[in-house]
Image 1 (cartoon, rainbow, N blue to C red):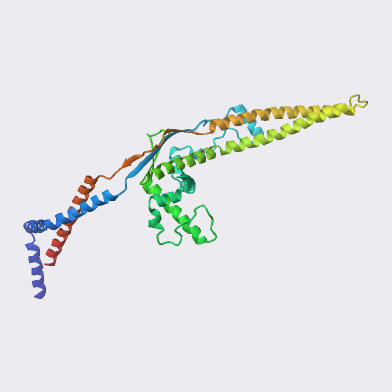
Image 2 (cartoon, one colour):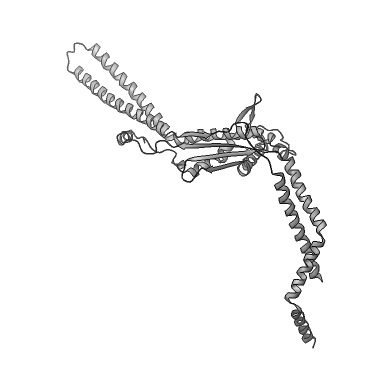
Length: 361
């Protein structure tokens, strides 16, 4: 009997549920929330006022932008005659060195690479007549030294010095890495100007106008030097090899000519035919050396021309100039956004409270 009565009780509870009761419950919740309107409006106003105060105290941001077009130069192989000649001497004339950067997306990754950004951070800029590392410039001008190094044993550190204490070196590397992460995630933006173009826009936005301009210019300078060096590295190696080979053949060729002249002077009236054989051999060697030297000179000029044509050219279209474009946060917009955010949060809070009270009953 107890089991049956329990079952009937559960059925009675199920039968009592109806849409009307649900609507009434929802109405009660709304009335409860509306009854809390002074608290809701007060909290919403506090949210909006807090956002407005933060906007007023927040420093303005400055935007520096550099737009450039990349001219890759000669991308085809050198003339077939010069290439064949280079192969005879074991060199590759006119090859596309640095092909890893043939894609524009790879160049974008190169600009924001850790290698070049850290290299830029460890370079210096002259500020008020004093040389200052960009890493120190970043930490001091943007107040990160106080945030990151306030409680550290190493408040002042030279990022270009290799210390005997390994912990100090690890700490310096960690600070540099934190700066890199901050710049990539918050300050530096790289976009391609249109699909399929070779025009790239690199921008930097920070709260210090001078750092923004100086760092972006230094970064693009490091990228330019590194890209050109990498792109032309193989051509430069070929040119150096050819130059060394040409110089050595030239020395041997000139020595052979002087040697033949000296031999002729000492055997003006030869009585034996052996001297003629030696003289003919010297003449043959000179002709071979002359031919080799002439071909090497052609190859050398071809390599110089190939290096010149393969050297990429950065054509800067827009450069930052002081004063930079200034951005201030919108006082009214921030107040409105955070006012409605606070309003929604408090309404949700009181709705949850009322629902929990109903469930407890």
